[in-house]
Image (cartoon, rainbow, N blue to C red):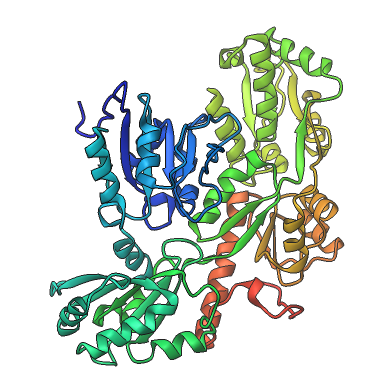
Length: 566
């Protein structure tokens, strides 16, 4: 048995896992944390932590907000916690707004409770008290460490806390630090990591100077660390107040936001310029609109996140069954009875449509035995492989119908016993592939496997962001996404970077009054994302070379003219 295997919950007291949710990046959750969340019956957490952990909670889990200042906390007479989804159940919780009591009450009846806290439980102000309360009540518990903000945030800011010289590192919470604490760290020449708030940074710097640190000691201040909202300022103990004022960060109603400040030579700007790997990502902080079906957008959004972007998926088309399913039913039966030599899939949706029809008839991938299978591109091929079918033909060049035709063999009556191709596709698909196959000597059963219809308009705030310049970029993956997005949400603002998958899509965008900034070198959604990342990288390099601050397109002056990317 693994030393971290989930212990059995007691029939009376249940079990509590105190879990560190890390400093903000959901990717920093440990494997053990994900395992505990997947098995939890009740999740107790402050609102700021819920977005990090709830994606790993199973359907049906009850979520109790432990923030005493939140309206979401259960109150007398209304023991209704917020829930992960509509199928979730309600945890029985007491009227007392005490996190320890919430945790223990939730654990009763043999339930598994996960108490998620920011950072690491060992450094959380109240977690130890809650553990002691569990111990006193006989409620078994365990601790799953997390990445502490004082360690994770400097790593994302490009500020190493130690080097080969092995300098001393001190951690200070400015909210609870005593005069003796400031005196000790002020007398040290090691690195000091200070947890404080934005409007208290200057006061903490003053405490260190008063305790003996030189005013010219380098200092970095990072807010929203490890998230795509992260921002870091370089200064010294003596200049930090002026730096934040000049950056128009303070005074601000958001001055109470938590920050991590690192004091010492390892936070010098020259060193950070080389090590700031996170904030220097090509699309760092860019809000990118992805107008595709939600299923198609998932892998593209993951790729955009790897570049530091914040993808926002807006479905512009919905996929529906054909109005007359009989043609599809006959084709699938013909596939099983040997009517076809080939089946050609031109999209992931076509694969899904055939797979659903197979499942309706109780068929599986074995029905493709003896039939050659073609896929128009890598994403379609992946969908087939997930179905258990390895395609025989994928374009070696351009990932399109034209590219598929270039590699498609002509019909040979000697080697091809059957001359017919099954082509399941959308109702609005072009005739390029059909005409090309006929020219090669094949008979084609061109079957409508699914219909594409315009999706419902997105929420009002999304429409306003699109038209008002709230997005930094939009990715158009087809002419229909251009037409549909403009139709349901309006035309993107002129400061928004427009990226198109190919010439036809670019032409449609221009016909709708949009200036195209980026075009993929080949018709692939992943190449399109790469091209946008290259654009962002060149834009960042140009700003640095000119000595200008690196800004996002949405931060430009409204109405500013934009140059076409070369």
